[in-house]
Length: 137
Image (cartoon, rainbow, N blue to C red; front, side, top):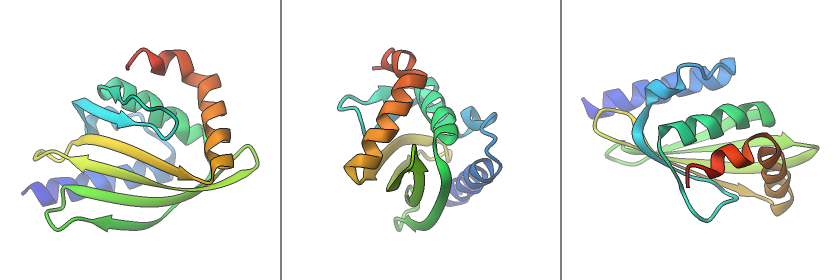
């Protein structure tokens, strides 16, 4: 049952990203979720932090595309590889997502390369939500 719930959540996630409509995102995230940003050492705590970060970054990324997906044997961890542009910089990255038994996102960690793309993303996110997101540390 857990694997089916996680597949459903991943399916809904992909639909939201494709439509660029994250209005129902909070439904997919555990209230005590943890978000690990590629530009911050300290993780952000709670559903609201993750919703804020993801709802903002979807509007920062240009030409965002997921192109590979990896799932652990138990299905509780999924890695989604992506590419995007930010401010004229190309980047590649991976979303590492951990799920609970109910299929809710428990942890969401992002890694991005190269450094020029990461810096462009950090700068733009800082302009848009820097102070708001910092409150969740």
